[in-house]
Length: 249
Image 1 (tube, rainbow, N blue to C red):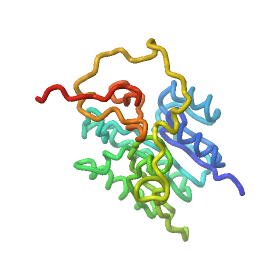
Image 2 (image 1 turned 180 degrees about the horizontal axis):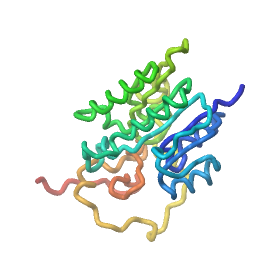
Image 3 (image 1 turned 90 degrees about the vertical axis):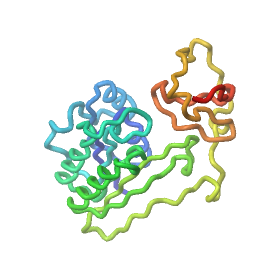
């Protein structure tokens, strides 16, 4: 079977594209504005990424599949949000490339905060644009723990199929969890046998009040909380003692 030619936008360091590559997709062009991310992408995925502002690119290779995760700061539930920030509208660049390339299908992944409260207006604006571009569009919030990942990670997925194609996409049913055939993958399943690290590799900064406002530690027999790259939100290791409330405010 011929590999599916794929374009990736807002590609970051290439985690999603590495998964696509392992599934047999042919990522022929990618883009990110971060130089560090592009260098990491090249090391992990390959030298197909162009570094720079996507708005500065107007020519793209032929592709059947378009994927992307435009920045999420305006939609996140985990930090400061600014509904007027221009970063909230980078989906317009995704829409621009979608119309130029006209792939058979596209997938967008983003934070689940996009699906709640005042953020839903921006979500529906995206759906409207993609439908006007000629695609049948569906969206759903999926949790990675229901698909074999040892962390609770809820994300919005938007899938579009070009309207001239006779295909109706359905989101996959959960494979793990209380309503599925298999038990959730837990931290003990993926951390078993790994060495304990030295004291010097712990973050020794004091806990911030915001950090302590959420449940950051889960037991060995549970999936991890959502894993992120900054200490402000990173979960505690299950070998750490449980957090205890000592005062009410």
